[in-house]
Picture 1 (cartoon, rainbow, N blue to C red):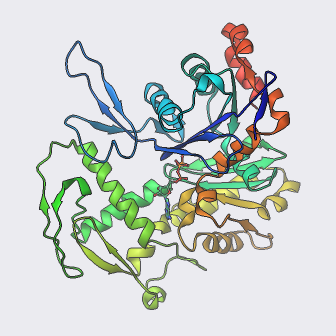
Picture 2 (picture 1 turned 90 degrees about the vertical axis):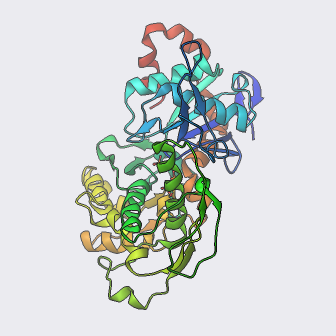
Length: 408
Ligand SMILES: Nc1ncnc2c1ncn2[C@@H]1O[C@H](COP(=O)(O)OP(=O)(O)OP(=O)(O)O)[C@@H](O)[C@H]1O
């Protein structure tokens, strides 16, 4: 479906920058065609006459390069390094999607806690660098609600860098109820890394292995390793990829009621996993359930975040929010997550009618913000909402006011 813009029918572009993945595609489509890691490689200038360069993309990061450092332009869900982020946007839109941003309006999603200066900067990059004809910033949580056919609800998003809770009412964020913290996928990964190292599992990443030798379950692996000049940050990045695979294949959330119980989990089946260097074993009990516990047991657990968010909203809205919780973000794909969330909330708010909606399909769960942005930007009425290039040019020093006024 195309968006009416300036009398012409052109599809808008939709860009959803996340801390793990930057998703891009055409409005009206079901899924983003371009999904690029937000983590990138940085090559410093070799000498005074050369320039630094950015290495972007899964494949490009599958092997180390001398002096390439691995970085991430985001912190706290918010863009900090605009030079790098701009390169990632250009890569996602031009190289991967093969789109020409000059010809399409662009909708970008943002977290509900984004700061005005950062919003202005996103608009500046869109108009000045990507040279788009029109631009809009939409709240990720509002988009995630739309993707699930809702204009009102409590959006609980657990991704890589952060977990957030955002009340959405009639398509608008209720700002006083926005809560977020960093207990999400990356925090689970760090916990797993500590535990796996304590078990003497070497976590050799793929790039290091020149030959793998089959070993018995639980035996130390005996691969032939390559000599490389990988930086420490590249090695850590490559290890984090292995931990991610382990987590996604082995880990689960203890579904409750109550916290993870070592004895109760004793009869549960384990999961077999083989590391790239050949180490393999069947992992059960704490190896599966302990790390995801941190979502529910830290002082700032997801349950606390949700209660704080609901209690910050008007009392007459609270029952409705309890009964329209929507979970999104790929960390919520951990088996047992939704059951545990329901059980924790029922225990913490007895009497409240708790209902949690979680799309079954992993793409819908991970890409909900993008999908909602795709729906929003393809609505016939949306063309009235875009900030046009003319408005941007005319606003001059008032650009901050323009983005704050128009992209509410
Ligand atoms: N099947 C799975 N089980 C558990 N965790 C998963 C699964 N699939 C992906 N993840 C984790 O989800 C996180 C990525 O979440 P998501 O896809 O929502 O990214 P994002 O939108 O870039 O994140 P953020 O919300 O932090 O910006 C990673 O930590 C990844 O390991």
